[in-house]
Length: 493
Image 1 (cartoon, one colour):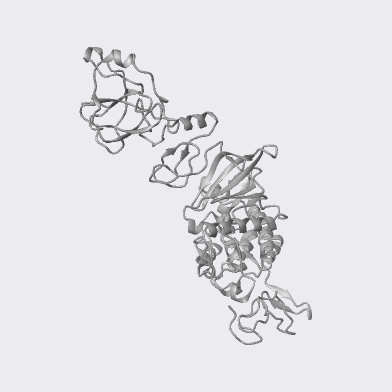
Image 2 (cartoon, rainbow, N blue to C red):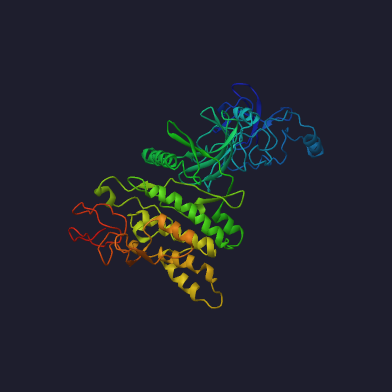
């Protein structure tokens, strides 16, 4: 039968299931844990007690009926008294009636919510009154609510995102979580020292200490890249990089808008107007040209509609997420070594999938992005070039003649061979501005016309394209478009 036990610290009387001997509970009044001894007394009708549920995982005793009322109760004396017991509790209500995390009704004297696992602690109630919300575990198989201030889920151990109201570095107040992924979370926050300026904060979450330095380097590199792109209008400004123990935070300009992928999905993949696609392509080319002009060149490696935000004016865009960008190395060995395989399927060319990206890999991704924005269809890598052929030949749904050049330009940059693509974002921007695909260029020395992207003039041998990185074998420069070194004859990688 049920037993009554008084808390060893505050002497509060509690009703426990009859199988509670030897088990550990927490007092709902003083929060001190205790183990029920063999000497615990059985319940009597005159004992005013608070009913404590059995610990999670144990079977409820048949002698203790399940508590359905969210208020404290006394033991039943008889059927005729049951209504009086329900309406006039003989003991005060302990703790909140509803869970502060999921709003489910709580059992009297409960130390945790049976629905979401939220632990009812005195310090969490204080934090709630200060405007800090419970931290919800992002583990899909857990989802427990945790008291504010906890950094690890008390049920599964997963690192928790910050709750609203949390203050970072005594300056940035978290307002709400915007997104979360494998590498961290993104929050909308307020900079309390800059006229309550809204900012976006990327929180680096790293559970494995062995990966901490690697992820921290990603964060530092992203901050450096954004600083180098400060003059490019469509790149968010970086305000701060905070490193605190095993946590790091990147404070960025908050962008009010929605990424182009979400807009496509919400509009049933309806294509954007061609003029908008052209204008956005020109702006993206400015970013890529700036990155590729660095020494050594920087490659974005993850250009796609999801990483382009459309602002509230429905015209302007901002590029986001430069966390995967990296340089190609300062020496020949670094440039030709396989890099970390970072890519999104459908937007990456073969050389990037193989771990050897180069600036023209970003041009491939740009072509995939423009294709999706102009058609509403998800790209499938280089096979999308065949889809464009079908579009251009489709008599039933023909592409308007004034837009065909755009699809031809996209097709060129979806070539599996990088040498068959445009050589730079600057060239793509020039054709976007002229609204045509350039096929011939004059030689600067003899003025004869040559096929575009031909490395040397067919008449006077004057170089026509930009220099390539030094040959891996002889260390001498060649011209873009050359497949073999003109000095040593070896195949150029």
